[in-house]
Image (cartoon, rainbow, N blue to C red):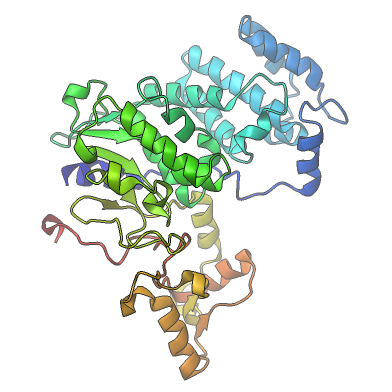
Length: 421
């Protein structure tokens, strides 16, 4: 538990970024321009053909890039550049960030990469291949890791243990499971990406496996599935192959740590019980995902696994704070917005009454009739829901079983170790 107390708890307080590129979807017109003209050859404010030539020279003669950036109009910002040409702007920002890093300007490089990550999160990595900008998802990954390595945190606290982080060099299958970090780093599952990169820059990381107390196995399994990178059969096969590639593997995954940060939890690795029964899993889900009819019992074991909250982007928190009314002025005692249909009921393998409190609460309200200060479900927009939640003393998050139901802070079935009581 020292790893949990010293490493995981401080980590969870740091999982945030400057901007969520997926929270501001593109207009249909903008999306059409990206798809039909990825190289930005027509109808643009800037001369992107010349920019592309400068970028292609950048690898050999980086002074071309510096000179070109100096020539850009001082009134144009990165948002305007991205609006004019998404992939060209991402490529330009990539090369500029890399140049800043190689010149030793670490703080400026980190700031520019934050922008780059935000913009790159707004599209699937495969779409960028439609253009001819010479920058790939793997290039962004390498830059991200270079920054993580140079942004090492202060010295670790004593007696907290060390973690060894596996890489693609020793386990090639990881390349399939860790693609699209910018795209996968947003939304509920983003903690799979952030935990990975936090450990890469952590004082608790060791490059010597002989010193390691734990071995971290990165992977963005749920994003690979939901993002259309891989289907579930492929994800399962890749995890299976990965186990055979890990050079410091111990029986059943002892001292190895995985992240499965969605309501589906280890469901993206169907054969987990055969291959990683002794590994520690960081997950927000302690129950049984109700779409997996093959699953007969929860995987979660409090002595082995760690409950983490689903990732919530800072922009979402800011939106709630903006609409929050003073506590004494709030109209509602409690509100709930969510699904109560059968797909969010208890799993077919479960017979316990407390496995479906969401349905039980809905039934209780139906029997007693409407309550003036309690609002339970409504056809509102996301903005209206936030505003209503900011006008309520309590926001109910009753337990349900399903991919969008993990509690925002901690799951109710957690069993805390005695040291924390």
